[in-house]
Length: 156
Image (cartoon, rainbow, N blue to C red; front, top):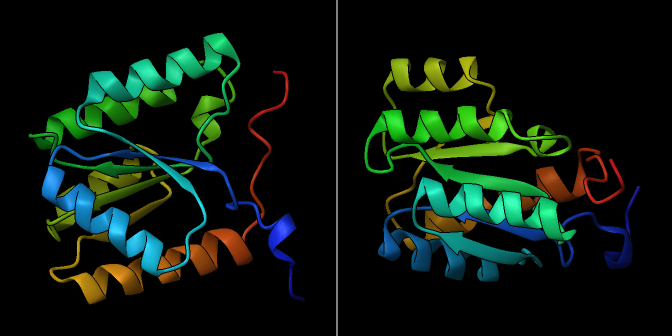
């Protein structure tokens, strides 16, 4: 079954990107555009800015992000894991937001520790632009065309 672009859940949705590397953010943003992700990507560079954005969205009735891309090392692994825990502790519906964890690490303890803390997916960051684009094409196809997502912007 093919959906029209008017009914695709990512079209025009907010996507929160928590990434402390400005260079990685620019690369990700350009790859998202090339991959056809029709989202409004909101970049924050640290855990506190991410929490501020989510809390302000809740308090002011601003559209919540449909998903969060989270760098594990912000700058330490513990910072990324603490932010994940803090997000999961926020009021409904924030804990339902899918969290895609991104890291240069493919260490099994990082991967299992992240899944144990409730992430939706763990992705190892690609090393070149074409691979970033391919990664975002896969994300778009899966999250936009395959899965059903909850409506996070109803009254809770």
